[in-house]
Amino acid sequence: MLTPGFKDMLNGMGRRISNLRRQQGLTQEQLAEKTGLDRVSVGYIEQGRRAPKLSTLYTLAKALGCDMGDFFA
Image (cartoon, rainbow, N blue to C red):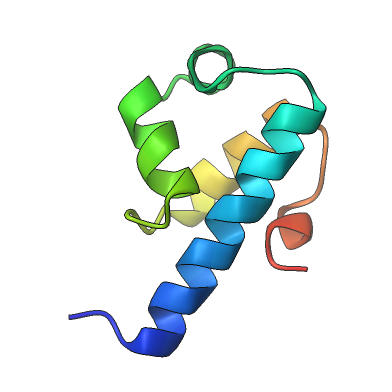
């Protein structure tokens, strides 16, 4: 079971990833193609329903042209 604080962190991180994706003019499907993830996984991450591995966060950051720390700012 996820603690409330961890769920809040996942939700915030997901919103920031979604905002960065939209700023780039990308759909979830396009981001998925750039990262090798499936669209559903990108959606779950953005919704805070999935806790991504560090390697996935690195891949997302690289595809979005940002630092992983931007997901937590």
